[in-house]
Image (cartoon, rainbow, N blue to C red):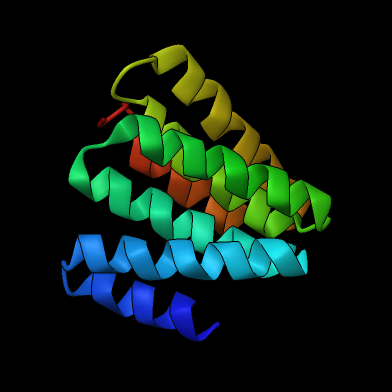
Length: 130
């Protein structure tokens, strides 16, 4: 978890190469331990950093990895967040895939009884501001 926290802080400071390095190190540890919860946070942070760098393909890879880890850990909240960031990553190259991912996130938020998150996502993407 320390590597995740350090990586997240470095990312917030805009020190992206160092952040990626810390998060990748933490990812290897969490992966070896089978900790899907931490893997979700790591992949989400990596997706966010790659989005900020304009590296949409790597952002999508990490978003999908977050979705898979969340599904394995039965964490519908993290799964919804993964779908949401996947939509953000795909909005730049494949609007249909982006819309599908975002709709999946909205449905999961609603199924969890989190209509405010679903509505916030709808408001953020309507009309698609990507």
